[in-house]
Image (tube, rainbow over all chains, first blue to last red; front, side):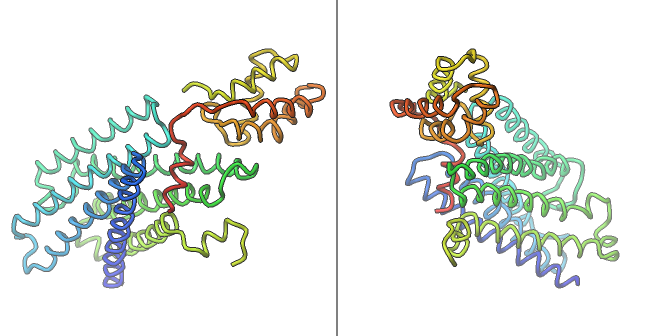
Length: 258
Length: 100
């Protein structure tokens, strides 16, 4: 179970980073073509958060585990982790910018919320860095300040997407909307939920206060890794249907026979 | 955000063609739009035409407006002259592009 969970977690994280990179680059190319801010913000958000951010963090984690004594890892691993976090945090701000720009443009409370979450994220992360979090990766108070933002902003994205999906369904019923586009709001909301789910599930051992050894003995760590991996694979699948809907999926919404 | 030109036009037409006052006319159209998943600030003339043809007659009939179908048909026809003001992109337009 332990090896299976770890393998699934690594594979899903790598797959997630890969598809996020492809999606991010595709959206940035689209924004260069259209000149629109929406795809630029989302492209940067997905690319920086999931591909470059998580990618660098994973490189650091894997690199440390390959060392004979991970606790004596050279400083370069902390630098890689720091760079990963910086890209990740900028990406989080871009995704929140996308939500405000697309769903709540000109709405004061949404701007204030995005600003407050961004400030909290950077302040919490700055504290975490100053307490040595980049070197040991151990959860402490400041880490949970960061997680309070990283683990909640996807719920905002999901709520906006689901609310708009409800509106789109009513439009579709009157012939005023495209079914595939309506479905894309549902998919993006689901992707946001699976993202939030994986963020929280992987942190359950830390939330319960279990030590690494204790979590491993009870099977909690493996269970959480397995579930996080499964949520990651689900997110990859949803991203695929959202940004690269295959012909058979498009046909579900066009009324054509498969 | 200000209401769209097409929304204001339908409300004004409804107010002049029926016994509904300004508040009731605007409220009725808002309810019709909400039921259709549309926003008064972004509704286009083409969308308002569909609302006038398919949703508004029921709302007017429920409020005791006589000859609701004919009133709505006239409103739908009058929308042909309305030019939509250029407004910001809707979430629908953005998400339509995301899937390629």
